Length: 508
Image (cartoon, rainbow, N blue to C red; front, side, top):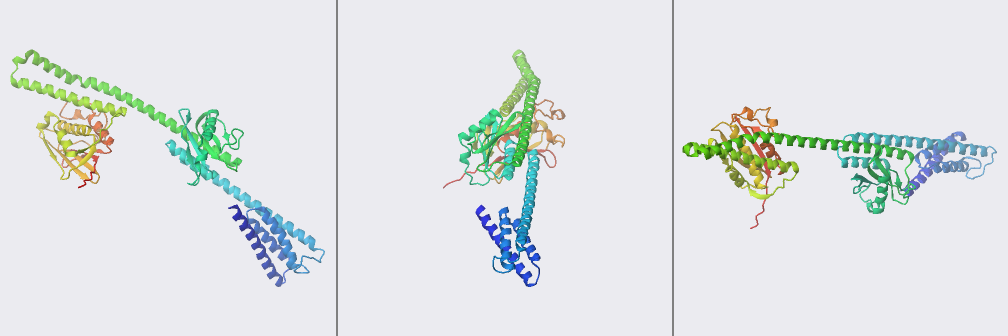
């Protein structure tokens, strides 16, 4: 690249001297004075200094211009002799004027370039500040920092993040895709980065510490806390003072962003722990209150049967049996929900995914719903297609049972509950609709919240923990689906959830 620039500058210099000479000959034939022709050559040197990259070309152009002027325009013409005793002074004056003009032009051009470069670097620093202000993840912060530094320095770099008082695996950022990154990721290079982490000081190339390293390593820090180490590939050209100043400013912004990310993450973790603790408190409070009623009912009915069973007629006994059965089934359903909630909270709900026929899952679930289902008109309308889904059948049955029990509990006797299935593209859609009183708009956003129950406004006065729908939403989300609530027409509520369809290729 430099060789190409050199050839281009030589061509430009020769071209300007040729053009100046042609204009000078034209002025000569018009009878203009030598002073005007000298000004043309000085202008040519000025333009040469502007269009070339190095000052040496304007110096050479000034000397060559004197020689060419002597050859073309002084007596005797077309020789390098000069008869007039004033010509040496003219030549010296012309050379000095051309040289000074060219030098001034080069200096102005250099100042303009430095000013432009300074403005560009300042813009990079400002853009970095703006970009990092919107980043929330470590990876995003590091990526933005590396991108901005590559714009600033035009160099490859390696970044290590601090994890558990040591360095993570390095992330390499190259200016081009073909960068040979292996030589910058060796154990020797990483040992220099570790030294920087432990000592919170610069090291590596262009320093007195590990000067044979490939990169210059700097800590990404705020005060005495180091969040990472960055390695800048130095090669043969060290950073200048201004580049180093902007680099330190950007690394400071990066460290501040990483500190904010850490504080936000710790705050979120603390809030989550507080939320979990509150959840446990609410759970224990709800359990202690809600278990007392069915247990008291079961023990009381059982005691009556043991003590006075022979005195009760068959209808009374049957009613006591049914009451005990209803309360025990409610407790079983409650325990199932509690176990599932606990597994979800602890992240231990391992889905046992198997390919199942959706209609069979729904049919099986409908056989396990509340005894009160006989007081309602329940129907299942299957789609014409055989819909296969890859799900944990036990959990999907629990979702259907919870939604159906809610529909039975919160709708009037004789209400109609319809379950339908449908296949839409790569999703199976299950729709459970009732024609009960429906759910008001102000309650809709709350029905999926844990421990929320609208039972107080319903006909059935038994309290519920409010775990059912919250658990259903979590289970469906774990399967990659979505559970939502809409209004039925003309009245009632519709719960709709989706499941991924499992495609099976049949080979005949």
